[in-house]
Length: 391
Image (cartoon, rainbow, N blue to C red):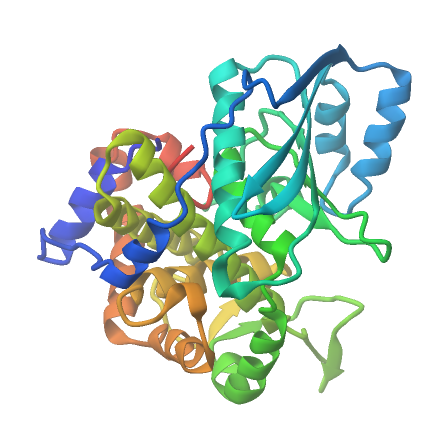
């Protein structure tokens, strides 16, 4: 668990409210309580577990799996330096719905405990996603490829050129026309939360059409939130000599929601496994999300949140959804987060301009400007660009 106790203490002092705690709706906790993890672990007699080393043939298979714009040469080199492979297969039967699981784990060194945590988180996620929203078209097979690389996401907010692919993505879900879909995860960092994020994409839950409707409904509000400053890009339009980049609001809203759901699910799962308080950890997740958003603004030479946010970076998708995620967490008591609708999305977009939300962001900017060196004990928090506090 990432230690942010000093950050929370400073944040609360600046807001003159030491009892900041997000209120978790009883309905949300009641719904999540339905989806306990199973006891199906690596040593269960129904789980097949094959160990091996990676040879030239396996390397060719790996290269085929990792053909993605997310995978840079630096990340690819890390992946291809992994020496061992473990193949884990089993059938998961929940409420008479049978799912065939195949996990291809590539690693140099990993503990049995970590593998058990991956399987446990996966089973919890499948149990949740296949039941929520009455989905009838559940996948019969889930193919997961985990490249257990020690590559951390960083953001040195005082430096330029930080929004690189090495610092942003951790995984992707590949969809094909013949339904040969698979998930690829290539970082150790936040692995279980990332797994729940990609599972959300894998199951889809018919969220895409809702986002399209939300963008049509609130486009004017969205366009007044964020603009890109003179970045040359082949997808841009040029007007009066200035470059106007087309912002992908679909990706921003979609990724923000998927990330928020994954964070809530993993925080809930983590609290059950470690006897923690769900509301307290969700509050910590919210404050950390604000802190990460503040880093982005300072990196873009913005020391006070005002709209529209004028960004100098081309990667507005990864930038924008930090703010949406923060707003989603802040409003967890006001919306049905697991069954979000058009009105909920409108509320989230509107609440980003709320003065209390702006004050929360500005408080974290102030922390970064004035408190980091003397009051933040764990310096890892300063340069990380991870999305949540739990591993």
